[in-house]
Length: 150
Image (cartoon, rainbow, N blue to C red; front, side, top):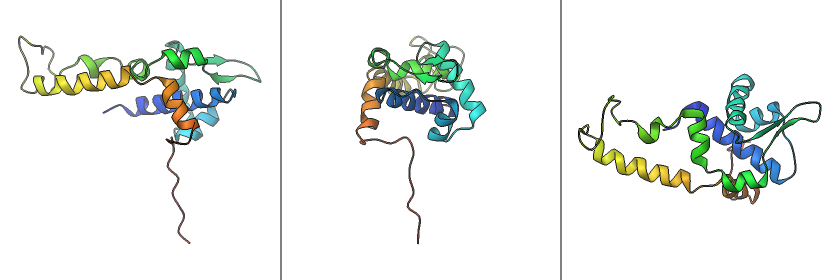
């Protein structure tokens, strides 16, 4: 549903937010490792998130990425998706047609509209803070840990 870049962007944002809850600024390498993403690709994604004013970057030896509590509380997950993938998922045609609306719908228009609306509402109502707290509390995870067979 989301592009690979968007998936990494969501994970990176949540990792930065969770670290910020612990008053830790995190470096590119830490983020890339935590979200299982190549460093160069992660750097490009983080640039988009900084430019979109979702996360904050601090330069220098004590630099890294961070997110304020205020930002975590006000930023919905939808803003991260739009920053990385644009709003095509919420505005585009299910079949990729140039023109598709209520007056000239594609064959999937009605069914896709309700799915798109539900997804948009879900992402609009999911704040970075709520998701970061679920990570902080151990209720959710960004990485799956496999048990090694003996």
